[in-house]
Length: 376
Image (tube, rainbow, N blue to C red; front, side, top):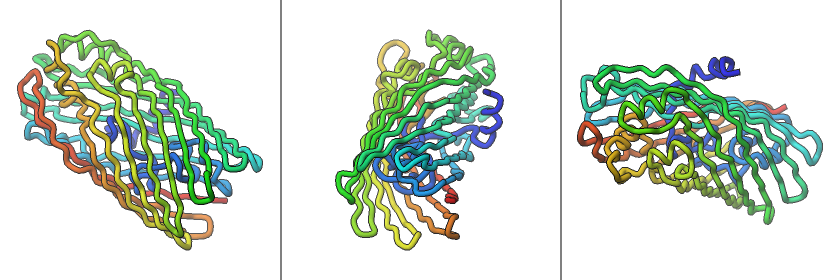
């Protein structure tokens, strides 16, 4: 199973993220609207945001797309060479009866990485990191009147690789693991124009053997190989007026309760997303905004604060906070539609003290997403 998933990830290596190590949205339309999707329908792609909302699918629907990610990470005056990435997504949904729906999604959801290997900057320890998370999620939903309920078991694939030179050059080979979790969602139409939604995604425990433990030991720490993707709670609101939809989502990402992340000093994160869409005659235009303060806590304290800062800010600089998004889509034929989006992650500057001295991280990013929907 791991080998099969690994092949599908060849185009997603060195994936970067935005809310901590999570993407703000998983499809072109969601990313155009700031990452919303808990209360507003994304068609079959709703399986990734709120499984209850696949109940909005009118016909059999297949979606596929890709995001081109260009992060710019400059640490202590040196730019990371890991700066071009492709992230795929696929989804399918259809109705079984007038009340039951099912679907399947496969998508890159999280990841981080830098490449300062052989950079000539000794303060960066020739650091090279690559973490990739992909989810396979079947989904089933039930709809009765204004209420929809959805459930999605999650099979999660993870891969982690590190290289560094802290006096002796070391490459810790790629470690892979599969984890299991679940996501549940509800959606309710308060009125024909007002929709609300809520989701809960369980934590998923992952173990990257002989990678985290070996690296932390070399830096004087005792941290195991478990890196748990955190539980998430989400709430959403969407209001339709004329041809406009205004949607807002809130998510609480529990990094501070997740094993591995809490040892690295990460804290729980509040994610706010806002999207506005105009749609008429099969064509839509949208803009959005997403904000989440970095979960990394640089004032970790204690004797190992400089080590923690080094591992966080040099190897895994999840420091993005503000994203501005725009997109559009249209029907190409009666059955085929095209969605596009552009997202800009504004430059964020972080200063901290690491084992080699001051660390200054400048992090910005741009993404272009293209997706196709085929209904039949």
